[in-house]
Amino acid sequence: MILRCTHLLIATILSFAISLPLLSEMPKWQQASERLDSLTPKLLQQHQVPGASIALIEHGEIIWAKAYGVTNALTQEPVTVETVFEACSMSKPVFTYAVLKLVEQGKLELDRPLVDYMEKPYLSDEPLHRIITARMVFSHTSGFPNWRRGKKLSVAFEPGTSYRYSGEGFLFLQKAVERIVDEPLEPWIQQSLLQPLMMADSSFIWQTQYKEKAAAGHDSDGKVKGKRRHYEKPNSAYTLYTTPSDYARFLVEMLRSDRAARHSLKSGTIENMLTPQITLPDNEDRARGLGWVLKTGVTPVVAYHSGSNGTGFRCNSQFDPKTNVGVVIMTNGVNGRKVWQAVMEVLEEDLFVRP
Image (cartoon, rainbow, N blue to C red; front, side, top):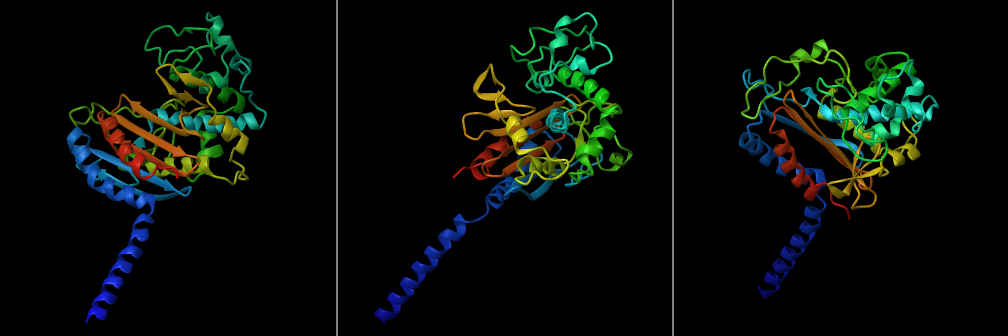
């Protein structure tokens, strides 16, 4: 009897010991997704954000995607993983990647003034703009404001010497690029990057098929924003329409070790994108790379970019080139930043953990 009890006790201990590694070996994305399934609906309700959609990357692959809430507070149409959102300023890294391919092809120089590529000066009475380069635009050191907002566009400081977030800089570069490639932004970036990456639901201009699958933007009370404004003209700084899964395909491209594809940038160019160009004035552990914001307190850096449009969309993306993980979060409410920040707190604990 004693021997039988001893065997039973040993078997129980062994069973428990074996189960511990199994728990610890649960994929990081699975741990994160279980917590997000519980947390996200509560966050949407708490912050009056109608909907959200999230995609996770692990081992350099899209491993999980899920949608929560509704696309429109009036129609109550549910968000799906195919729902299209505005990527807002997350448009900038995509455009940056495509432009750096022109640099590799010798069609554009990072440190050559952009006016050299244009038929005439962008601003006839602003001499400082004549020294702005693509590198300055990507790192937000052009001296341009974010947007002119009906005012005369001017340069606030000598380009390249200080930091000032600027959408106008990206529009300036876009005009130079369109001159170089001799076609508008949308067809060029579709052919050179979006289509090769299989980003079938992505476009820098409104598409008719979006009518049935696009989320509506909402105000801080969770109500549908006024008359919807569709982007008929592309702007490299903010007009990208996409899904989290589509944008995650772009992050996978950033993480890819095989750089042989025709559309892919060389590994050295990727390293340049993730090399600090200027430290942010309000945070010494953050810097601007080429197109990305960089967390410089770790090596190699972690890259991210968020987005916020006045049309009622808030989003965020982040990836870690060391661990090959990433996330894309998109929401359709003005308070969406509070949602994605809380989601990121979970992911920093469960997904973005370095060994």
